[in-house]
Length: 90
Image (cartoon, rainbow, N blue to C red; front, side):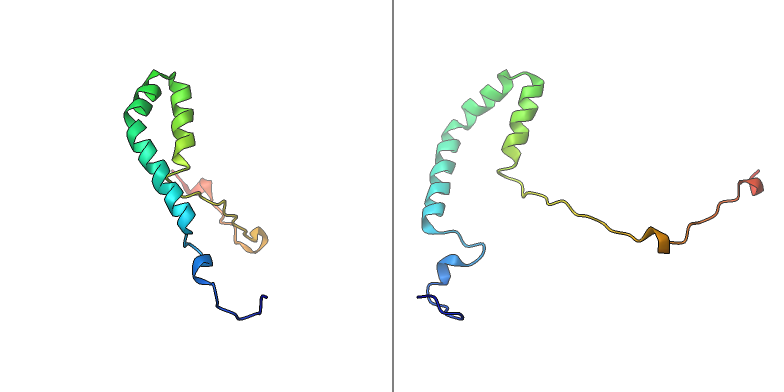
């Protein structure tokens, strides 16, 4: 039964720590891909440029961290708007 504050069994559910099944699966997929890398390169070279870019872009999400959108809020009414006088320029 769950009780607040109970730390029992917490080791496997810590953020950022993958379980053993996930680690084994990642290792297996990595091994399979290692043996297919030459064929993958040949396959990519045979694609049309736009298809090659799309394929590479799809593969990037597996090696690069996903970027999250960031919103910037500014109160424009409180900002001072600079005044530029063009009559003084020569």
